[in-house]
Length: 147
Image (cartoon, rainbow, N blue to C red; front, side, top):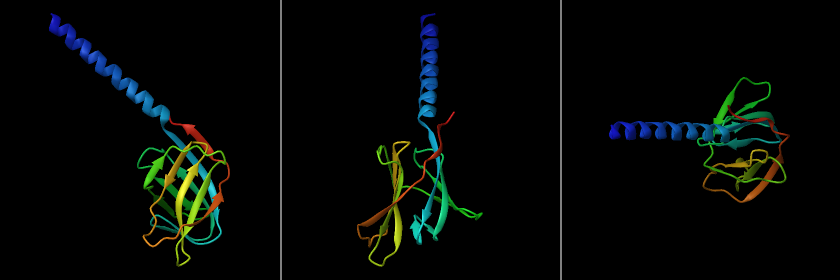
């Protein structure tokens, strides 16, 4: 009788911990959508972006933290994965950081989402110079907790 009671208590405890874990993970999952303008060609991961206006979407800042990016007016989209995701709250808002190498090619090195308090850092080619520029992003639209 005592082993049946302790077995039931263990099952209830495991169920309670599982329910708590599910509610905590869904409370921290956030998404963001935004827009930026590239004045010149840049590479973001394996995606080559020509000059123009782009939209992006982040479904969750949890790894793999895939960003979907597409040029306004085009049906083509690309997916880029960060090398590192960290929690950095910027007071200056959101920005996309471009880095140039010695050959003058631009690469996206980071995306800071100030509203979410998240920064995504991207791998750069080996021969890279630390000359960086930033593009200020407009307000992040639809930042919300997932349900």
